[in-house]
Image 1 (cartoon, rainbow, N blue to C red):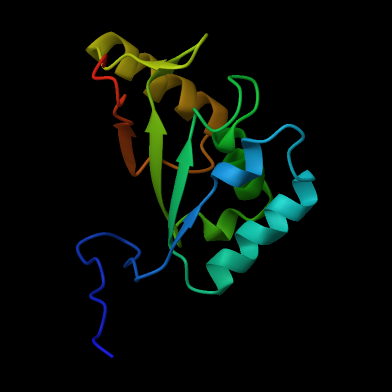
Image 2 (cartoon, helix red, strand yellow; image 1 turned 180 degrees about the horizontal axis):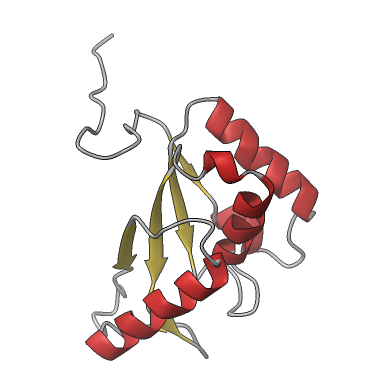
Length: 134
């Protein structure tokens, strides 16, 4: 079996397995918070050091950024063990993409505020709207 390369040049080094957080805040009802936090911890312990989160994964009042904030408030020593890729720049309702510099800045500021110093944003990107209306 061929070796899967690791992503280098980032800290921590990212291996071949990532963890997607959409299912933790997307559905209604969401999984219980304690179950979600335990799942995140298990993902890290299994070697998933790249987590994919998003402001679009849930509502503006509760999405995976809020869950990350809760996780890092409980497990502050884990903040430097995970690279977080954040999908954002959505504007409700309905959710659509606004890639303007003003909205990107607003999104970054909002996420930093939610994370409250518990974790930095390692990568922010906005998801492409398949209709081409970005």
